Length: 167
Image (cartoon, rainbow, N blue to C red):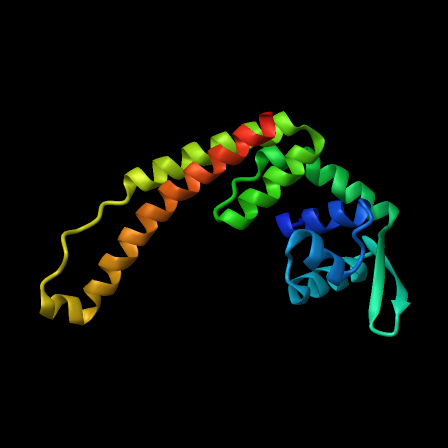
């Protein structure tokens, strides 16, 4: 059985809305052409998309019946997906918001709260002494500071998007 990724679902949703080439996905959704092409080709091979030649260098994709069913099924399971990275969080939020802006906003608020909880669990150690710093602990220390601050900043940004979606 094919288990779609959040990228698969996002691309299927965009293709369903007429964004049917790798270059259009790059232009409209900022998905890299390389990622788009690989995903489009994989979904076509699995029978979820059909391609037509748009030009010498471009293929235009459309959903097949199987692709529509996979998209519907995937959208119905969005609340069961626990994203572990920002890209997946934003993909799910977009897909939820495309059905209901409130659902997208609610998802983002929950994701922001999870991000804040994650930031709170990161304990930053005191700066290591020079010899310990040089042994690699300095890198670990810097990484911990960045992770803590990134989680907090991410939570703030997700809440801001949720507020804007609710307007």
